[in-house]
Image 1 (cartoon, rainbow, N blue to C red):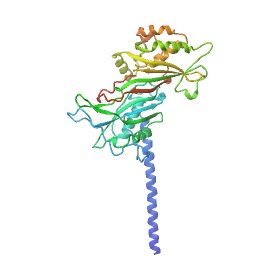
Image 2: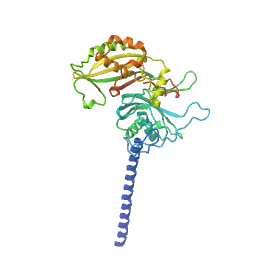
Image 3: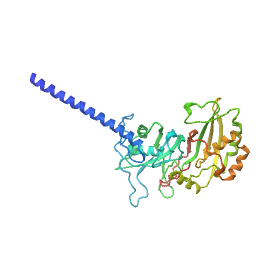
Image 4: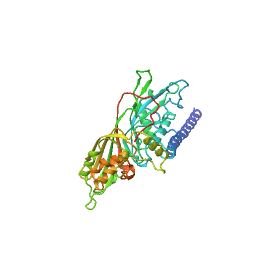
Length: 381
């Protein structure tokens, strides 16, 4: 009996030893996986795939990566007009300070590139993201509106898993400066004309955009707002007239041709910027500023310019703010605004306001699906 007990005890110790080795191995794999994601996210271009990361989501979602669906993105079969996919929409918030804008660039860190990279981890397929507004480098967003299409592979639909779990998984992989919220299935409908499937689109369903630009007029810049508010001195030798700014905003409201307030890309600009400028040059430059309000947020010089527009051209909002700052310092009279609009020449206008003060606050949109999948990449500012 003693010998038998000894043999049993030895086997228990051996099994325990193997258990410790297995636990150590599993921990090492998890650590390596996290490090791989971190290194891959830091490496450009961001459209390339990332290694999966292990974590546990609320409600038992095992990992931010694949959950038993997905695979390579399906291409439409010959003769088929529609791919097999599920469309999601969401709102994205980001601190744009360290990003080269929203739009993907092969050699720069962009918000769209980051989101597409983590979507590839989540769904194991290359997925393109459409965004309502292509914000410039350094511009922030609280309410960027997006949609993306996830392929249905081998009969397994991503919609079988709650959208909230997909949202959690994406945020677990994204940097803290980008957050996805309100993720949900986008509405669809059948066309009454031919029965085609119509999709809700973050471009075609847009009805307006709300931007804000933040100034610190006089006093001292708040270090906690140094990434989101532009400082304007207001001294006896350099006074800033906020009433003159208010007067000028009244003349900027309404529908105008905004060529005086629209930038064209320079020869040294990125290919994406040049392509965007060429696209703008071929478009109608008329846009409507529905409202433009000057809001004094407190008694210590915090001022916010609130814009509601039907659409914004390239750097249009920042160029308006740059002109308004010149009005505040008396370099341009409010009465000159109509003449500046009619000039239709950007070359002799004031410089645009710094990007850091601008935030895309919200996108206004309708719910009724109106678009087919193609063409959702033609976006404005």
